[in-house]
Structures are given as C-alpha cells and as structure tokens.
Image (tube, rainbow, N blue to C red; front, side, top):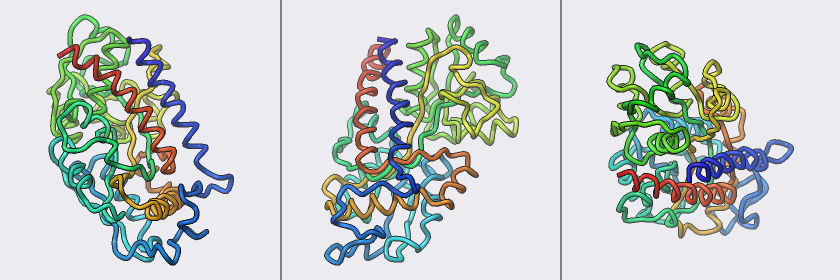
Length: 343
C-alpha cells in the first residue's frame, strides 16, 4: 500500500508538470477553449452569449492571507477591467468548516458564471472525508492557476537542523505536527510521510494555515507541512527553519531548502489552486471563462505578481484541470483508507 500510494502521487505530479506545459501554444497564449464556437478569437462572448454583463465574484472558502486567497487577489489585480467586457473580478472570503461553508455557497449559487469557487484540494477531500451537502461532481473546472509543493518546517529553536535528523527522530518518537485542519493537504501529506517513511506524528489540527504557522513560530509543535509559497517568507526571515520540500527540483520560493529527493526520500507532493463553477453552468459561459482566464493567467503581469509572492504558476485549461482533479480524487481515495485505518 505504501509503495502504491507513493508511486501514484509521484506519477500524478509529474503528469501535472507535463500537462501544464502542454496547455500553452508556442506563442504562450491560452489553450483553445472547450467550446470554440462560443467565443471570438479575442476570447470575448459571441453576440448570442453576451457574458458577462456584471462583475464576477470568486468565493475564497478560507481566511484572507493564505495561498488560495493571495492567488485569487493577484488574478483580480492582473485582470483589472481589461477583460470580461470591462467588468471586474471581486474576491470574497467566506471561511468556515474547513472550506465547506464557502464551497456550499458556490454549489448552491446560480449556475450563470457570476459566482465562482477558488478551488483547492479541499474541493476533493471535503466530500470524501466529511458529510457535505455537495459532491466534487457538483462543480465544473475552469482553470488551474498554481501547483505549490509541500515544505516541512520546524521552529527556529528546534534541535533538528536537517530533514534526515527529523525523520530519524520521528521513527522512534511521535513528533507533534501542526496542520491547518483534519484531512487538509498538509495533514494528508503527513499521513503519506508516515506510510512512506515509517515516521510517527501526533497532529494538532487548527482552523487555518495562519494559525498553523503561529503554532510553529511559537515553538508549540515540533513541525508542520505547508506549501513552499506560504512558508517562504518566514524561512527567509529566520522565523522558522525549512528542512525539505516535496518537489523534484528545489522550489523557486525556497531555493536554499533541499528537496526530499535530494535527501533520499522519493516524495513529490503539493497543493493546487484553481477556479471552478457550479456544474450546470452553460457551455458557452464556461467557454468564455476558460478562454479569458487562460489569457489572464499567462500575462506577464500575472506571472510577475505570482513570482513576487512566491507562488509558482502552473496553468491548466478547463479540460486539463478536470482530468487532474479526477486523478487527484483517485489518489485521495487511496489515502482515505489509510487515514480511516489509523483512527
């Protein structure tokens, strides 16, 4: 089981990189929308579509300041009023229930393209691990914006200075690990570490990544897993120590932190950020959103703002993002059995 889950995750992430590259044309433009007949060459609606006629709202189901929130706000800034018939992208935070409140709001919204969800791993894991009034299939993918590898950090006062030291310690004594919530991406990455590397963790589940980080900085836990983009500033400031990043190559956001693979641990795991809409959103509206967001994501302004915020851009159009989510859901289903067996 350990080997199978590790292989599946590694293969999925490798496919993610290749698919992300394949979603661009040679000119660097967005890939063709799913329904080309519904949009003009410039990505705007055809005469019989007339979308949008007002601002588009993106619901972020987490507190402000986290990676999902930051990514969406950069997207909004890069778009300005230059797209979507001169209308704006409005970002609204709706935290609670580990993202369930915001996700439920979008699932119940009118399927007209004006209310979108900031999609993350929680869109898959919440219905899988919790009782929710919606399923992942109640949403339709529009675009992936970002894939951010997991990074393990420890307090600056920690006795562990290398990933190897932490791993060896955790093989003999359970270490306390802070997470942003039960069955979130960091928690599941910790579960995979237990399965793959034979380590032991006692989890302290919090309500957000910000609280999780405070637990580490306050020396209340031994370690935590969070995305490299979210960990970067605290590592560079010396507020915490970064011991390892779960990517094939070192993350641009944390260039001095070695990869798990460099240290001899074959693990490639991360979190993603994207956009979804209610499943019954009309094809012609999905086509406009697909095409236009693809154009915005690949602009120099968006790319630069993301780099400045330590957020790696990995673009996938609607079809490619949907395929990625299907693979991700299959992998999470395998991890679910492991989590439930350990409870």
